[in-house]
Image 1 (cartoon, rainbow, N blue to C red):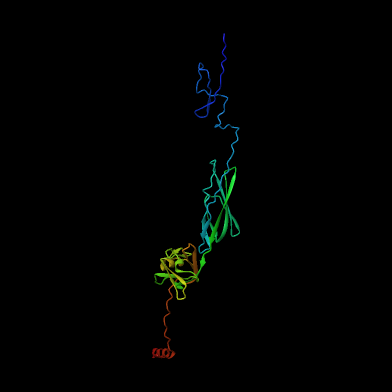
Image 2: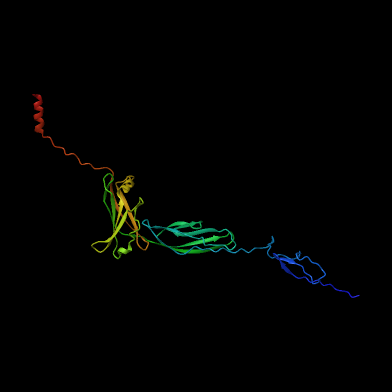
Length: 282
């Protein structure tokens, strides 16, 4: 009697989501096609003892920044680290550091808004996913404002007198042209935040560019009514066409009361007084 040797050949097949099934070459043997080999391991399943490698985050401090300082010599700068990312999807923490006026400053916000005096800065951003860190830097340049000669009129401001306007008269340095001034931009009177009503740019007899800014007298008067001194320091600022600021300062004398003229007193002669006294005795 002829003996048949049945040889089963295991064929590894992929069915569905990474399942290993058995197949045999004997047509007389029925095998469940969905049977899973209990000895095979699904590579997509993470076991408790498996070590998952962390991918470090990537810090992005944004593009270099140019800002313009105002009359106070500082500029507001918005930093932006929102393009920093983590391939694992881990939540990131942010740490900005910079040095200004000799002081080390820092912020843990994604996009902090900071004030910087005019000058050049290198600001560092470090992000962390809790395991690894990454750093990036952004260069910031704050441009110094121009200070020009300014005369404020009237030089003596009576808060109770009538009048509609006050004016700031600028004379720009030699080399500036009319087109260098952004006349459409509103000028500001500080420290009261008073906006200009209008501004006019021209050229004086010496060929220098002039700027005349007009402000509301009553609004300024209400602000000056709160001061405790008789002199106020006025600062007016505007913008040039390239985005940089210019400013000027002047002192104004403030009168809070109307000065009434003294009444003219007619002197009485002594002889007349004696005659009146003698008449009364009679």
